[in-house]
Length: 338
Ligand code: 13P
Ligand code: SF4
Image (tube, rainbow, N blue to C red; front, side):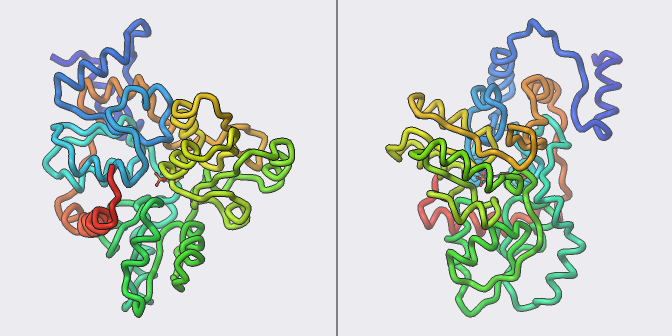
């Protein structure tokens, strides 16, 4: 039987986005989460931008592509997504009959928010012959208006899969879009969206930092602005940046992406030094406020009560899944594995 506190917390879910229940501070959350995984046949998938404790308790940690591939192949009955809303929605579209949980429904994404589907629909009507390629960082509704999805790992391969005589609309990230135009030589129509975390890096401060660390490699995510990318020694998705730091002999790296990735970089190369690229404000951190809404307490509560759950209507799932399936097919053929 549910106690009154639980009933109130469940009722306020829509407003708060998470189960606002007290958690006994003496509870061993790692042990409890591992117990719940077994009891419920649940898998915890975590993005590299999650806080380190969540990464450590996850069954799989990855970038957006790896997470989508893992969600598509898991046999677990419940998928617990330690990431943001569009990622959990993607997992739900791939698993309409499974329960997909997100510890905090308000863990959104500024990029996804920057491209509302009704506005995009009008924009798309201006280019009726164009193929729509959308970055996976978009809403389920936008996916219903998309031909092929991509992530930062496979974007170049996806763009190159579109016949050369076809025009392309790329949404919603104008920075990734501009980078891809340069890399592929394709003249794409770009939607004017951006990620709040990757637009904050200061070129001036990075330049000063490099003077003090002359042997450091400067590595950046392609969601960063062009003037930051121009100076990078290496550009890649989170998993590609991680791989680069493992394989490159340099001992110091200045990292221009969300700081959560540094946890895995440091675990893989304990002897190396990782410096978060400085943002253009007084704050010293590059945290994504959406990603960091998830906490161990919220993860535990969400697994215990199986709430909040991602609910999508069947028509959105059917229409939106087509572009994700297409992306997964092209990625598998190109050798991308989770
Ligand atoms: P990747 O996971 O593709 O590196 O993208 C990073 C990101 O911003 C996810 O929100
Ligand atoms: Fe969205 Fe940027 Fe946060 Fe990724 S880091 S979830 S793109 S706001």
